[in-house]
Image (cartoon, rainbow, N blue to C red; front, side):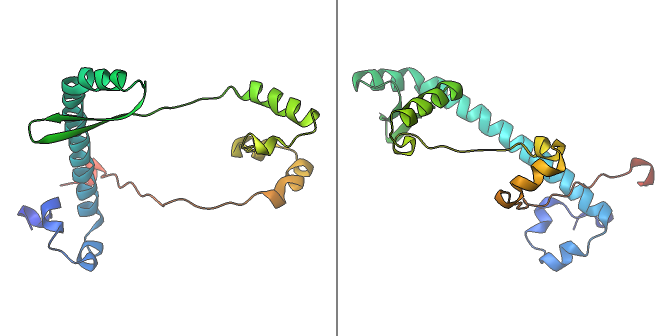
Length: 162
């Protein structure tokens, strides 16, 4: 551990989880802040390197896609002993109101829209909470609530720190 008995992130690799759990809340708050800053710096550095790589190989990747007769997808480039796999994913968006009209038309023609499209219904939790009780009761059997990963943010009260 480092000065004043405050462990640093580097110290954690050698500490059993029970020892970390037993640390005072102030130490955990400092470690959380240090980890947040290290993650921010790592993400910023990765974005910088990824941006440089994209600028270096974007034109060659676009030319390779054009030569392959495609606008999106994966192409492979070679630079010395390095193979670069350049992916330009396709992100398709569908106009929901137009799809609803088409689904109605398919259904009116006597066909099953499920053969052509995936239909998903969603309910905003905020809207659900604002509904009258009799409407909520009708939807209750179709609703399942799962929980996500718990998070804890420790904030050091600066006036309490020596």
